[in-house]
Length: 144
View 1 (cartoon, rainbow, N blue to C red):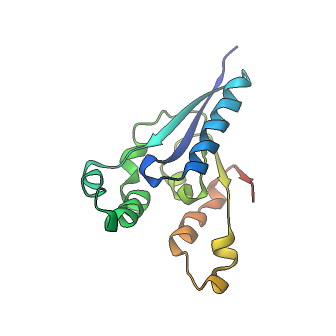
View 2 (view 1 turned 90 degrees about the horizontal axis):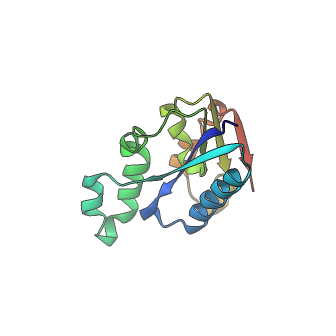
């Protein structure tokens, strides 16, 4: 029996989002156990430029923003053009513009920064940018 190949796009390792990493690994394990899917977890890597400056604590947040919103195309250029691609973190929803899969799936974990943006006195404009691509997904999984 042919298994359907599924790309699962995780986070940048340096983003230090353990819960997202765990979710990606659990999703991969579940798909693998189903005997219908062959998961391929894609761990995003910093560009050499960002990797060089990431060591400076005061720049870490900006390096991750640069990678997540500007330099990510190189990270995605090496992925297989599988039938299904699942982006496991809604902060990366804008990646959908680079995908060539027949089916694109997104997991949305937490919308509190948007729902309560006025109370929190924050404007999560980068998150809003990512989520502006929701209509491009074939399926959306919401856990929150």
